[in-house]
Length: 229
Length: 115
Image (cartoon, rainbow over all chains, first blue to last red; front, top):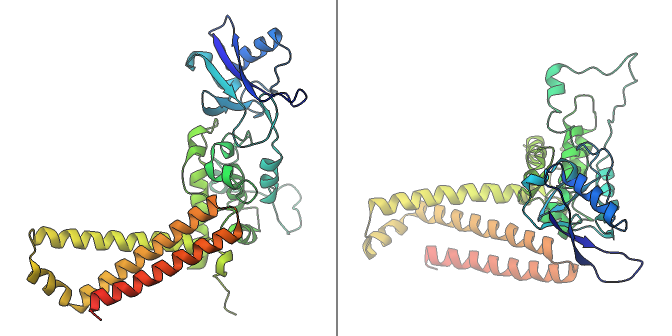
């Protein structure tokens, strides 16, 4: 199989370029191929950990589309397979990007339960129906595929929370154990943090966990409107 | 105590909601207009004049135009917010667009009521 991989090494100071590779493989996942390529050329840098779509480390741009290398079958890819780092974030080296901005936005939505009641003896219980509200939200692995596919996040990464962060924001707004929904909505009501979303829906299109951040953003807007009228 | 809902330019919900509501107004007016044109396939001057002699038609048309201008305002503001990084240039664009839209609104009133 033929590959074209984005190469950048800040230590050499050379401009980024696409390097061609060939590999005798056609089955398995893209990550397997990358690991085999790294045996050919150990200067090739990429992140990976769980190799089964749970950790979100090996998110990259595969043939123009963000995804996880470990759950992308080689047989599904057109050749030459073009691999680039996630768009819109500073490149550290080759396929490795600096995710600081992404996680800064994630932390800004306070991704933890806020509950001022004294903790009960065992745990804060939820009814099955309350728990069901979290489906389609809690599964997010923070790989960054959605936010880095979002043009609004490309233009305003410092002011727009981005689809991943907003999906998480809704995950806590809707949680029956959380008591800070009002403050969370206040935090998102300025024209940038939430409202830069123009329902382009690249996020829902690329999410490797098949989640729908656009729908979650819609729910947040719905809550804001309900609170107002 | 009345809870303040709108927060001036610091509020993104107002613009977003304005865009949605104005879209509904425009859609309804479009349906009315298409309905009238179906009933009067080849309207001549007297039919147009009779239609716009009614203050209700004039008012509904003005409402439609105001919805259009509000919709355009939010759209252009969104484009400037997305792409124009300099606050000064953004403010300049806002000023020009508001000036244009307000003058269009005055012009629309003059056309509809023949001042």
